[in-house]
Image (tube, rainbow, N blue to C red):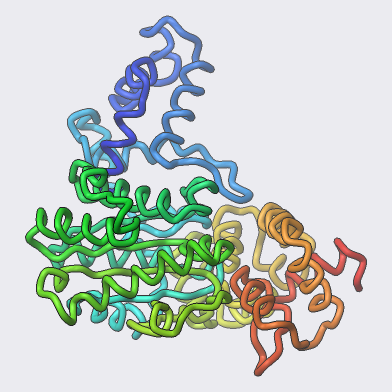
Amino acid sequence: MNRVEFEKALDTVPPRKKEVLKLFLLGHSDAEMGEKLNITANTVSRHIAETCKLFGLSNGEGEHYCYRYDLFDIFIEHLPVWVSPEKIKEYRLTGQEEPPFPGRGLKAGSPFYIERSPIEQKSQSAIRQPGGLLRICAPRRMGKTSLLNRLMTVAQDDLKYRTATLNFYKLEDSMLENLDRLLKWFCETLSYELGLPPTFEDYWNERIGCKSSCTRYLESYVLAKIDSPIIIAMDDVDRLFEHPSVAVGFFSLVRGWSEEAEAQDSWQSFRQIIAYSTDVYIDFPVNQSPFNVGRPVRLPAINAPQVLQLARQYGGDNLTQFSETEAETLLGFVGGTPHLVQLALYHIYDDKITLTDLHSSQPIFMEIYANHLERLQQKLETYPVLLEAFKEVVAAKAPIKLSQRLTKQLIGLGVVQPVDWQVKISCQLYQQYFDAQWDLG
């Protein structure tokens, strides 16, 4: 969480919850806080849980974890005067960082980030270029957001760029269906991220259209106000692929802004990163697509030495005997998707499963992956055509050929992988689960 996000979250905390929060950060127990505020300990606990959500701390897939102590990390970083000196001292004396529950992008500098060299170096080189455009493409759960977090921290701390992160998953569905609304959201969110008052309405002109208005706003207001390089990271942009006319309009701007740097000095300071899960399956005019320019980066699956490295980083008594044999066994079952590997390592670290289970008890793996698998199934069932195509893959148990669009969508979900011009299911876990769900075995 950066400073702007922190201040925005703090502003949303209601007064009563803020009273509880301040007492909590000073080290009071729930009972003590309840007595001071004349409320029950259960009410205190509820206030803290709801405050955690306001700061982006909430449970993900299969997670049953109390995030209240993560608030200390956030406030020690951004508002330490609210935290008791004893808690700050305890924080600084803490040894190895506790492994986070897998499911969110890792913060920059996390010891649980697995570097896939030379991707990081090439990505940093791309964002140093005037007008640079970096394209990060990988299936879901492959680590795109973690790489984005790392790059944005390098840009801000080392390169002294002004940074803005726009998460397209936060977009209302109605904004995906109207280019004018989408571009206004883009301008307002960008302004907020950069700490500028959003004044895009002063630049919006129906006679020249929303694309020209948006470009004018960026050039005449944003770039004119900031005298250092600016980098925008746009995550989950493939949400637009389901709305081709809006997507073509928006992405033609992304390409155009990158190309402006070749002709105009005012755009030299502008850089962009776009991250998406699936290759483009809509038609672009060849000279308007950003997906055939800039620096492309694809995140590969992790391998056994990297799994072994990650297990060593998790540490703990249960992983001291984790060897390359265990790494290969785990990869054989869940493939090289970092999220699936991390779920197994986390549960071994947390005493939920053992190394013996890894070799002999696959049903217990179904238990730790249950929420992930259920959500994946729900996602597939939302798109009947995609669901039927995937059922063909599961039933075939061998590579088969699908249409280009369906192939790209299923690869984006992470449930299949390409084999020459065909696809096959991406791991044994998915094969066993969906065989059982649909009685295809």
